Length: 228
Length: 220
Image (cartoon, rainbow over all chains, first blue to last red; front, side, top):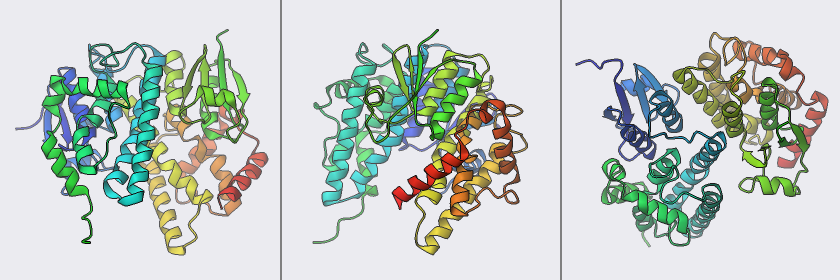
């Protein structure tokens, strides 16, 4: 059966946080979509056709046209389906703050988790300290830029930054367990409270992989420890 | 008059993105040249996260990160738009902006932090050329500018490829944007610099070359 051009298709991977961002946004907006799970070690022809430059997930297909890069897809979704809930605030300065911290998460925090997973000993410890510093900066930034918000940045519903940070932190317990670290905790009270509030959101539970599956996935990424 | 300040270094291509955007929209601002080497208190206060230029300060509120600033300018002053109207075309423009952002380091590193190993150097150069090939075929394609017939936000984002890259090419003797290999991209560098707002707002070339020489020495 052929896909109708107006249909929305999401090409993704179950353990990719970037994919989860898009799935969450679509569900938040009540947009029906078809999901295609990609095997990233054996990418489909369609994925290579729709994202020839990077060959990565997620890709959103809308009216037969592909959109790539998760943050770009989120802004696209907000503009095309511009009914509530809005993913970005209306005020240009608030929008700039949301974009700034989303970029900070993507450029600094996301890449910083790999060294923690893959390094050992002193190098690993340094990587953990670097990440803790970034979380501290994030905590200070959130306090300053979103002083009134309690649970979610956009008030009571999830916005773009909630999606980005929420997805990233949802399985923090799995990350802590596998790496023997405590990146997110009471020392970052605002982030900690907000992450725990978001874990309870039904859409988060519905969309994100469960703890055990993530633990297994993270363990498979770690280099085996040499025999001592 | 609205209170708009731009904190910058005269030599920075990222600062120039902001200057170009404001000029293209006819927005008046006060330019403040900031002292280097972390000495500026104003910079540290207005950009505590990165302590880098450019920073835009509008009515006392600070915005950092050049592409975030450009989006802010576009959102706040929508006349003379720098992004297309259609959401899909806008997503495409953002894709090319991100592509440029992700590629810039590998291109400038080629000149600023070249590998001393010959084999690695060859690989570096090849990678940069592959990136430029994508820009040539898919970014610019048949268009005069990334933005179409007129320059837009994508062109501003790629501004470093002209003037600054020319300076680095002159210093090192490595001609990266070779007109025979990348005719469209090369033509773009010439066309972009001819746009009046750009032409009138570029750092002095000779001064820039001296500055880039000095910075290159710092790394090596």
